[in-house]
Image 1 (cartoon, rainbow, N blue to C red):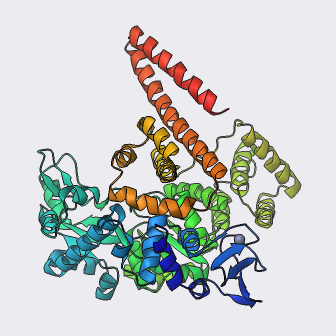
Image 2 (image 1 turned 60 degrees about the horizontal axis):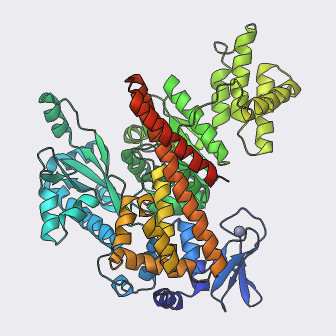
Image 3 (image 1 turned 90 degrees about the vertical axis):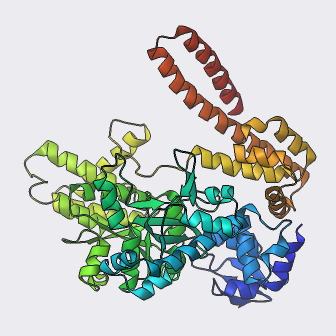
Length: 577
Ligand SMILES: [Zn+2]
């Protein structure tokens, strides 16, 4: 099984390959570079052409080209395999036990849909006019491969004709059953924006409804108005919380400028790009997540954000700021003036964004400017002063750089007339009150953490891959298969499936070199994590059910639930020991 990866490694010489990502300097018979996985000023990243391996003596990361690309581009193994196979000029089919693997078929169908949408765009005048009215040029439309979804069963029928089965079409988020049980296209009368992953593969879509379609539905007085923008659901190849719109194209510019402009919608991204701001990404239809920021952090140290000139905009900025600071980003803010969003600003003045970015202020300064206007900071109202100062100190607190903390403390001291020393003391007391869960209202985190389910799936995936190396593991999993998410339980029941074949490949790669003891430990750890995840979910459900039963005064049910609850708690307790 591992042979395929060997073929790729033979074709892609590691030094040549890494030159595309790093500046390599000769070091004896090896090469060295600045490690891209941890910040450093002197190179400790060593590449060995003899062994076709790399290793960083600064952070301990190391491996072959697969490991490198997985870390660097944040890819899962199957994606990395696909990516490198293409670079090596190897037919991906020759790599696979079967032709239509889970990943492969989803990539293929999404790509096919993109082509169909694209071909339909020139035939729809309203869609074209809409794009023109928003200021998009034809070459931008082409470059980002925008398209049009007619609706009805238009796409579904075409995909069926191409040989895809209906389950795959649904699984790819391109069709869904309506209330009468009939399959219809997910995207109806929408302008389609293909969303690509980091290596430029289309993995999902956002569809913007046609103005006339929206008006028609509004006129019909539909109770549920369709959303203006609709996203593909998450799938095996698309995870909203990881992918940023446009990043595949803009990452080079982000890398070069070390800064990134984050905007909200696709239109904002495209118009910024068109006006020459190439280091731009959009978070479409979702909040920024740690995954997004982690990904950007490797390319940039400055983020530029725009926000609305109102109370809500300020609140949003303040929340986002804590978040950016926890990733040690330097944050700059641009004002949009009277423009609704960056797209509007670009439409009115193609040079606007470029100028605005040049004049962007550090976010902390922006915030201080707002809070130190005479109307918000009243010199004689001591409680109000205290509130403002504490609030601002809370913004300073998450700054990872002591130098930056100090700069803003000095600035606050200057503007408030309070001595820096006193501010420092107040800051220290904040730290205490926070760490002891004190009374201070902490700013709620605007970004949800990755769902338990997602984590459970990741664990299940790794566990199953590991189980494929030892019959004993596999038997344990089979006995406990109810712990697995349904997709993995199904895989377990079909050992001859393509999905399993693929996982085997991943398995031999991931676990090939590990000794028995390490494998045992890994399996034990993963299994424990899976189990405790399932128990914690069960606990939450039980709590909900208990609440219901209690308010319904169903004593018998309450007793049953309580007994299960204590069982679950006991198990959680045992596991955590
Ligand atoms: Zn390193």
